[in-house]
Image 1 (cartoon, rainbow, N blue to C red):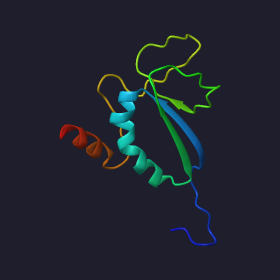
Image 2: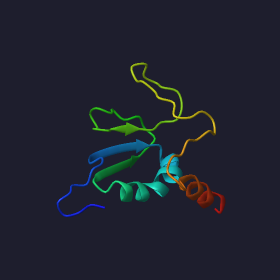
Image 3: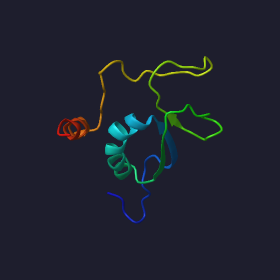
Image 4: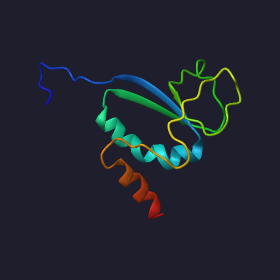
Length: 103
């Protein structure tokens, strides 16, 4: 509980994320509202597109891309391989996959 004399402790600031169009629509858009409710001091800008952005010039904090890296100067982190997902928020996987299985 946050009282009038206490400041909210947690992440705050701007967060710019880019992802492929289909991946973003299927996997990010359904959970962004919950993320922003959990972290109300974050201002998120989500850009969906299939082109590779210049992360520095476009001021992008997180870029999600699928496939091989075209530029050998980029560093990739592989959060999962194949169909293995690690979803840490309670109930998130149920909301993600139940929404898509009913479609």
